[in-house]
Image 1 (cartoon, rainbow over the protein chains, first blue to last red):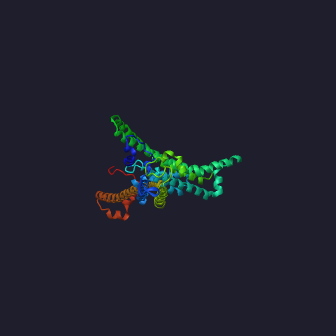
Image 2 (cartoon, helix red, strand yellow; image 1 turned 135 degrees about the vertical axis):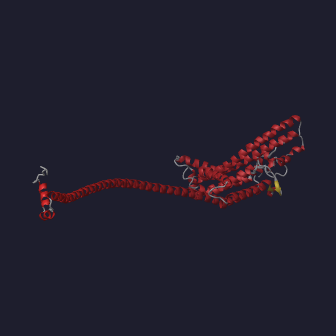
Amino acid sequence: MILASAQQLPMASGDEFVAPGSEIFWLPFIGEGDWAITEQMIWGGVSVILICAALIMLTRNVSIVPSKGQFLFEGFYNFARNSIARDMIGSKHFMRFVPFLFALFTLLLVNNWFGILPPVMNPTYGRIGFPIAAALVVYVIYHWVGIKRYGIKGYFAHMVPDGLPGWIKPAILVLEVITYFITRPLTLALRLFGNMFAGHILIVLFVSAAAYFLTQGVVFKLLAIPTFAMAGVMWLFEALIQALQAYVFTLLAASYIAGAVAEDH
Amino acid sequence: MLNVLAAFPSAVVTAAGEPKPPLIPHIPELIFGFVMLGIVYLVVAKKVVPNIERAYEERRAAIEGGMQQAEEAQAQAEAALQSYEAQLAEARTEANAIREQAREEGASIIAEMRNQANAEAARITESAKRQIEAERQQAIVSLRQEVGSMSTTLASKIVGESLEDEVRQKGIVDRFLAELEAGEVRPEKVDS
């Protein structure tokens, strides 16, 4: 929550403004220290309950002729099913990955939008543990389907494109192994985390700066207005970024799976 | 752990109670990240996707079935139209044939009627002629008798005696008349 976060800022200690840092993400809810249940975990759990309830309710009585709710849900589902899974993986193999990709996309979208949604105002995936978990699952899945399809030796051979001169193959293999095993999971997790983290900090920065200006002189009080307006702009901007990051994460997951099940490079 | 902390010096400067820099995962959150994805995945895989894909499949089948039905209906309609047209053409030719036949029959009936009428007219004429002839004969006969009787009466009056019986016996009058008809006797003036 913005206000809760802003109150946490150590600005009350003196006249000097202290920009919000990573400490605003540390919100232990139950307990303390290494095993504390954080506020993000609570909201994550709430998101899971909401998502499951909504999905079950929307698809419990699906019919050939859709109701309005079902029609909207189908549009959302078809986006993940067709625009992400089928377009990336191809119509031959995509169907068995649709449940995972749709679950991933829904979970990321809801939790990212929590970052701008009162009363949550906190993106769950701004805590590195959550994106690492999601990226690890994607990592295991695409290696698993690749090895299952080509065998361990075949999987590595599959990484090197055909038609390369013999001397360059080892170098390409090294690059591809680094890509497959290090770069991909790392960038996948860090991209999502960084966007959520930075976006949340930006909003909190503008709101807390505006709140700080209000405690100062007249000129600063006037400055508070555009600063608040800027927070609103960032809020809208974040809505876009958060949806985009959920989409990008899912799209890349589908792309990595597609690379592992592809017939050829 | 310390090395990682050293790598992010800005992150180490944290508020009281923040145990780790932002790039170090909080273990309960990491675990809960798997749990969240797992639960949503299970619900989606067991309930959501089967339900919605079944609806898609049913819709596809319904659309294909509907199209097939429409095609069948169209084919049936076309067949019906063709059979109607064939029947219509048949009925037309039949009507033409009937009309032609009727015309022929009418013509023959008219001709027959005309023949009948002619025959009847001829018959009537014939019978009239015959009747006239008979009446004429009758008139001749009766005239002959009367003329005979009148002549004999007249002759007897002139001669002064009745010639009736004699005339009858000898058939004078008849003979005279026959001769008269045959042109053997010229009528002569009585008072010459």
